[in-house]
Amino acid sequence: MMPENDTPQTPNAIPAPVPTRRDKRQGPWLFVAIAALALAGWQWFETRQKLIDTQTEVSRKLAEFDTGNKEDRGAQKQTREQIEALQARLGALDGKLAEFQGQSTMLQALVQDIARSREEVALLEVEQAIVLAGQQLQLAGNLPVAVLALQTADAQLARLDRPQYLPLRKAVAKDLARLSALPFVDMPGISLRLEQVLVGIDKLPLGSYGRPEKTAKIEMPVQGDQPWWERAGGQIWQELKGLVRIQRFDRDDPLLLAPEQGYLLRENLKLRLLNARLALFAHDQWTFRNELKVAQDLLSRHFEANDKAVQAAQNTLRQMTATEINVELPTLADSQAALRAVRQSKEKR
Image (cartoon, rainbow, N blue to C red; front, side, top):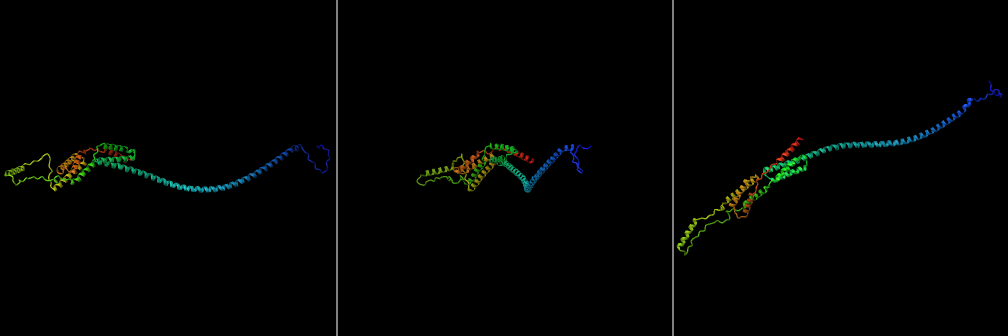
């Protein structure tokens, strides 16, 4: 079937394509495809440009990062060196700390040992003071020294200030109060006064020396103009006076002693006073007074009564005779028992 076209066809001529309905339908889509392709190309170009910019920025960042990383590596190296130095110093400090802790432990142990030693020394001093007080009471009867020893023990316990020593301190205070309540006998003072009398005995005058002897006065008849009967009467009277002697018996006259007997008398008097001194320390009241009375009797019988030294010795012996020396002294049983309890408790630890 030929197309309806009356145009004559030339020979050897290529017929022009005739647009079809399909070609007419594909014409707009081609422009759309080209536009899409152009848009895609533009987007690709823009995306490539952005990628280039991004690569440039990343490269710059990487360069900066690399520079910073190098700086960081240097800083890290320096930091590591500092850390290593600090670790070395820390190790040295740890060693010193361990050494210090060891020394501190040793020092604490030493301080504890010293404290225990001081406590033991103080307790030993307390024990010695209590023993001394007991010896002074039982052997010498020296009350002031015993009181002083107990006061020393109480002061030592007060410095310790430990609860476990409180019963011991209470016992010491109780014994101290008991001793303080006793009447005071000044035994050292009495002993010194006896010593003064003993020293002065050699200087006391005996009554048989320095006193003129009484001689009978014999009246001789006077030769002269007297009658013979007067002379005979005088002679008879003298004979009668010689037959009668008047003597007083209300007092004893001092005995006449030879010099060697005077020495023995003085030594005997010294022995009496020494016996009185021993009786004083032994708290023997009867012997003390008896010896002093015998000494007073010897002074009054054989020494010059009007001499001031003899009178002073008599007064001293008379005052000491009236002194009460036989004071019943208590024992320190409470303090000694408390001390034994403290020692036993320390041994159990």
